[in-house]
Length: 373
Image 1: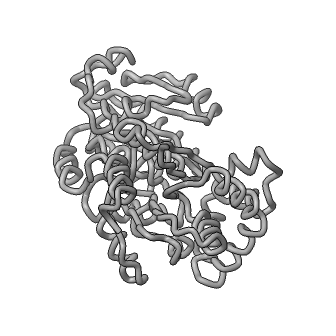
Image 2: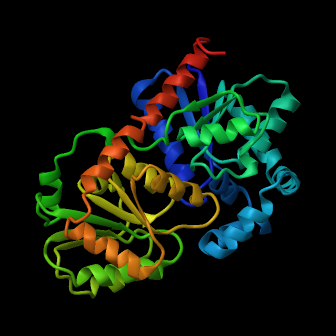
């Protein structure tokens, strides 16, 4: 009988679900002897009942950066985390306990802190010694809800986050990197993919990824870039923002530009680019760095994404600026090659961890094989 791995996540933004899918893919590809199952905290509850008021409020705050900043810092203490825990357990525990009982996992991995409360209660009530791994999906700025005694192993992006956890009394920590699609580490036929997009292989390619919050800032940047010279080319991924797609679709671009809506080929578009302009989310930052592409962060959702910006600046793996004139000035220097992106790529090469999803799957394999206790 196959041993079972339960992967727990929550689709608040894209980072948590991206990490879960990458880990699941790594098991399917490298350790097919295990059975895996992904449970999304939000999607599961949607099938079962209406979202609670608290969950609706959380979702709304994710769309409003100022509100999320307030939410993050007001709740980032043990008292508020204790209240948060009670709300989640009262609204969700019974349903998830039944799911755990039915699936009977041999090991549990989570990529969102809400699950810490549920797993802790489950292990205590059932007296089952199920190994529990928690993947922290942002750097450095870690909310107190991540810190929980139920976690047997913490898996983090970098050494900065590891030291932060050590200062919080955590000992079993593995620096794996952020689990992303393994294709980001593979060689890419840049000429072929760019040709498919109607672009040229030897030109500076800037990828603009429109993300959560401050959509106006991305439109400002696109408006600025569309009138520049033909010395570079652009790929714009509007994602779920149809209004942004419609606005861009009416623009006349001087540089060659490919406009894309929703896509499941982000790993291709990142790998053929020389610079990614996006918000500071854990997923897109780690995906870009995994492909050794510098990232420019003109906007981020306050709270945990501050840590991602901190790491980018500290190790000089990209750029962060919020003043629009300074953003334009930096972009002009990048396009004119006054700024050498190769230096940033070298810094990324020294910092990034190769194929974190495989590292996590390999660690789980060792735990289940009793090679790690």
